Length: 197
Length: 192
Image 1: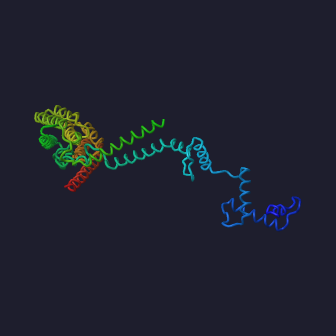
Image 2 (image 1 turned 60 degrees about the horizontal axis):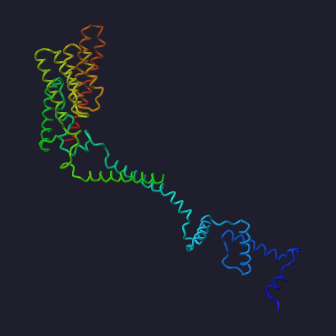
Image 3 (image 1 turned 90 degrees about the horizontal axis):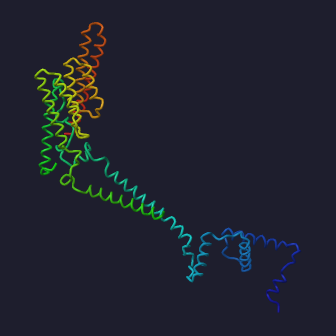
């Protein structure tokens, strides 16, 4: 009884025979199929023969080094192998974090933390700067609002007013007025603070 | 190395967070009732001592003037210029400018016009804030220019041109004084 293998052997042409047009057409169609598969456009349906041939073609291409696994897949495969070697269960489905990647993360961790804290610091400085628009002290209206105006050291313009030419040399009278006014503020402040300077 | 970077980063972040927290507390506190005033902005003992000394020097000068001792009066007013006031006190500029105006007038009365002008210029040069006292300096400067013009006129035809120039300078000084006074008065009216 003849088997299928016998039929295939019978169909195998002699290597020295010129290819028939049907063979050439079949070869061209299969070449297109291989190209599509390599470019990620594998047809959803194909004959069992074509599928078998396609798998063989893929294996042959891989063994010639034309195909390489992605670096992550390579690492994952090595990790799995190492895990199995030490008795741990292999991780499935690519969810394993390779040791090398974890090391990379560990190496980057200080810089990530440093970058984050630098951003926090910059934000804090910006907040401080925005919250205190000017320096506190003499002449700063923000600071001066905190105490009564008569307690503060300030220009004497409002007290003295415009100086007429006839009184240009009356500095003695003006210093009396300035001194009396400031003494009043000084005393009021001291009384309010119960004698504390 | 890693631990150093981590440590430094956390230290910086923690201290800045504390600073922000402190500033938040400061802003949240009721300002007028409980806040201790900044010593640099209130009338303190140092300011009162300086003002009292200025007052005394002026009184002393007045006594000398009553006696007709203009040299001693001038020396007494000069001492006001060397008084030590608290740093940044606006009263310091006002009192010194007023003393300079009086000093210049005393020097004028003694015929020392160039020295009087130098006294005024030394007061105007560093003044960064317009005040009625600065305006008064310009007024006295105008008077000095007028006095110089009169002196040139007394020399006859030779000093005629210089006399005209001095009068123009006097007008310019008076104009500046008027402008400052107007600006300040307007500002004070707006603040009321």
